[in-house]
Image (tube, rainbow, N blue to C red; front, top):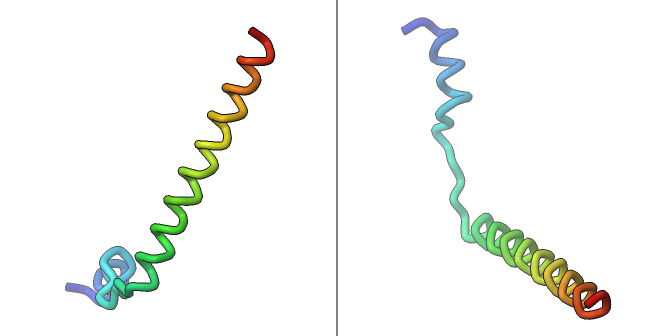
Length: 53
C-alpha cells in the first residue's frame, strides 16, 4: 500500500484507542445528564398542562 493510503487509514482506524474507565465514566455522566434534562422538560410540560387544563 502507498504511504498516503496508510496515513488516511490511520485517521479512520486509529491503532491506539484509549478505552479508559475515565472515558466510560464521562460517557455515563453525559447520559445521566441528558436523562435529567429530558425529565425536567417532561416535568415542565406536565405543569403547563395542569395549569392550562
